[in-house]
Image 1 (cartoon, rainbow, N blue to C red):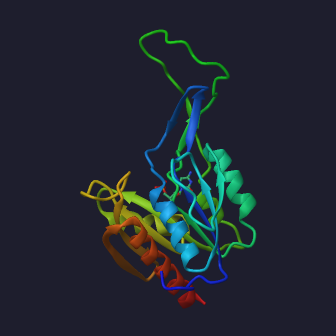
Image 2: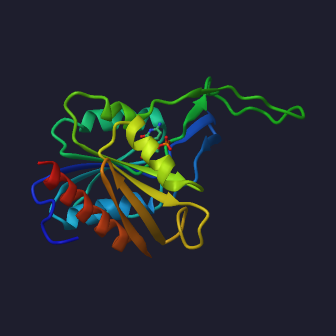
Length: 220
Ligand code: C5P
C-alpha cells in the first residue's frame, strides 16, 4: 500500500477459521487458510497502522510488527475481538467464522458406535454484525464469499450488517479463494464500488488497504 496511508490508525483484523469442538478429538469448522486476513494485516502494517490480528487455528507466520491473538472457537474470537475493540479505528472481519457450534461438546472422546450420529448445533454470535451494531464504531469492513449474483448478495450483506465496506470473493472461479495464493475482490460501499483484479493475496491486500484509506478520508 502507499506508504503511510493508514499512519497512526489502529486496525483490528480477524482471520482464519474457527473450530468448534465436538469432543476432544473432533470438530466442525469452515475451510480457511487465513492467507487473505494475514495478507491484509501485513498490508495495513506496511501502510503505517498499529495492527491487532485475532486468528483462528492456521499455520502461518505472524506478519512483522503485528500483534497476534490466537483463538480456536467463535466464542473465543468474539471475546478477543470485544476485548481489543476499544480505540480501534478500523475493523476488518476476514475470518471464516463457523455459523454453528455443537450444542453440548463432550468432555471425553465419543466411541465409534452405531450407523449414524446426530449432533445438535447452535448458532454462534455474528461478530461482525455485533461490532457494527455498536453506537461507537470503527470503520467496518466485511468479507463475503459468493458463488453467484456476487454484487446483489454482497450489497445485501453490506446493508443488513450495517457495514461501511464489503469485499466479495468470487468462489468457484479458477485461481480464487480458499487456500489459493491468488485472489480477486469486488469491493462495494453504499454509493460505489471498485474491482481489484486477480493477483497474489499480498498485492490484493495492499489495494484493499488503499481503498479503505480513501473511503475513510471521503467519509471524514
Ligand atoms: O453472513 P456471512 O457469514 O457470509 O458474512 C461474512 C462476514 O461476516 C465475514 O466478514 C465474516 O468474518 C463475518 N462473520 C463474523 N461472525 C460470524 C459470521 C461471519 O464476524 N459469526
